[in-house]
Image (cartoon, rainbow, N blue to C red; front, side):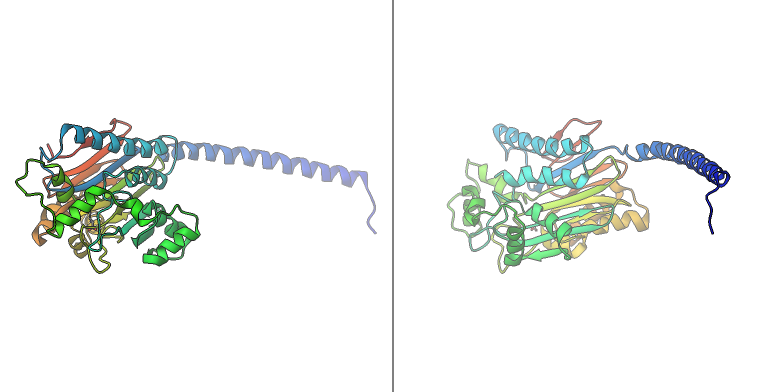
Length: 360
Ligand code: ASP
């Protein structure tokens, strides 16, 4: 039978003492390992945060925009850049930065996304959006939605909360409403200048091409989709694209913007991409993924790969448009085969800059 022995109890206490000592020293060791990790983590945490946006490419020539219009677009694009950048500088994730920047442009009537989207043949608005994050290749998209105030939020909802990558039409609208996203009547998205563009596309508008008033040229000659690619301090790249598609589209036409690999792509190993242009060509060439693959499999630099897909492949096929792309080192590129593209960038080294016309 077990008997209490003070000697035994003393030896137990010393065992405990040694266990505690050992644990403490092990903890200290772990801490040292952690602290050396911390320095590598903090290195990892120090990627050069960068955010790049576009507001569409097209036959945007100098003179299509009045000085006043230029200032308005520039101000709005800088607002989008700064909204996204604030997330990054505060230590936030690239996916949240992309959402913030795109929301600003979706809420503005200046762009073909959210409010101000172009009109379908039937005269209503039907929007597409997609988003992708480069660390786990997770992605979400919506196509042909008519009531979601910010379609990019719905793309993210699909990515985060559903087992799917893409939802479309009334089902996507329903899913967004069910999950509490802000919904609007279709009339909320429609603005007068888009009605005029549709009329012109249908040949029902009296504005002559040689008219002195050139204010319509910007709306008729620019694709106007919005996109954003961001790199956060953790080295994660995210990309998103949001659009109303193309004026006078029919039969539920969907372009490249909600298609992962065509209009949007992100992979930390290569880059993040958002496209704008004549979607049918971007789909056929799988432009966004194609660019990343040229880096991965052919070892091209970001710039070489962007040049190849836009200036060679897209141009040879007869397509028009452009893209923005960003890699993990904070290298960014905008490439287009149209006379102009609305674009901007912000980073630790660069204050927000916005450009419209041909590259200098
Ligand atoms: N790529 C879009 C589409 O084809 C249009 C755009 O870029 O404005 O739907």
